[in-house]
Length: 201
Ligand code: IMP
Ligand code: MG
Image (cartoon, rainbow, N blue to C red):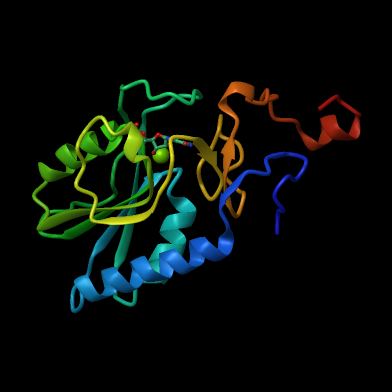
């Protein structure tokens, strides 16, 4: 297990630990299992932030579900929403007539989801619900009707459990806050050969 404050991610401000994540995701899974009993929901994970949540949530739902993924960009490498949403990867299969559950890592301004809901709505699903691991209610700009929420969090920039800063820190098992006034520099990726040569970090 990667412990909080590990050298590559020296953050100690843990907001949600692995035990809390597991417990809440079990509850969300049970709720979805009950709400969709007898059916076959289609979970749509929004890449890349939702990957760990999607994997754990799907295994907490006791139903014959299906999974698909899409990718949109809304942030670049900054910590503020650009307001521009671009489709990077579409779904593999049609969703007409399906009960869709969009699985998101975090709702910040809500712009990304507003765009996605509108786009998917046009494809004629039987229903669309949202399941977001995190929401930042203070930041909401667009009103999103999110049926399943893992945790409401304060207006802090968080990483871990899928959430990134400049594509890093997704692989932390916990969610922690970063100090936005003191963001670490992100060095270019180093190869093993460079490390062996003693290339500076
Ligand atoms: P929205 O369109 O403003 O709701 O932004 C949603 C997207 O922004 C999320 O799917 C994340 O990729 C990213 N995001 C928002 N807040 C955070 C954060 O605190 N940490 C990491 N990513 C975030
Ligand atoms: Mg995201």
